[in-house]
Image 1: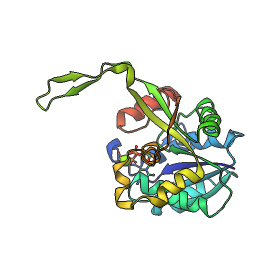
Image 2: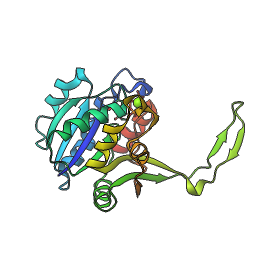
Image 3: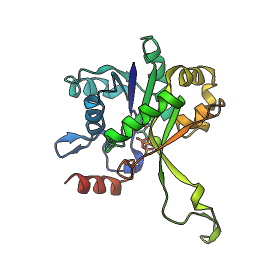
Length: 225
Ligand code: CTP
Ligand code: MG
């Protein structure tokens, strides 16, 4: 079975608009429902686990009641990696997960192509992350706001979610890491890679950006208009 895990347990502090960004209504639909709808309509995804803040468990269960693929809504942790950790341990209890696709609930514009490319690749390569090219110059900046030096742009890309793994590989990584060490990793691929696995990359899309600031919310509204 292929599971998708949608992460919703963040506080959205950088969006700074007094609301949890994942639950803001955009065109009459909560932000996280955009990616949830993509998962539900995708025939390659069998089950979905939602991970959210303890205080939002009932709310999330209520607004997602009609989604039959949802296996469970579970409590997240204080950091993103701990939220993933809790989700993986919950899924492990079902004993039926072969592959897991992990996605930020704050990236509403995931596409069918990105999901399918992740799933097709994970069956071949076991560990997959999504990337996009960078078109700007990339520099290292000095503290005095001058340019330190230019980095070689051809080799630098940005990593997005989804990231997709053979379930046993990422579960073992989480079972074998000291939880205090988890925050060294900024994403799931980084953690899995630290256990010696190669991460295959598939191309994402600039539209699959992460809503981080208030400005991102304005851009999202314009795209959806
Ligand atoms: N996330 C999570 N559990 C956490 C922290 C983050 O499930 N303890 C989720 C967020 O809900 C989001 C994704 O991980 O979908 C990416 O995190 P980020 O963009 O940093 O969102 P927030 O942590 O909510 O935002 P901020 O860092 O600005 O507070
Ligand atoms: Mg965060």
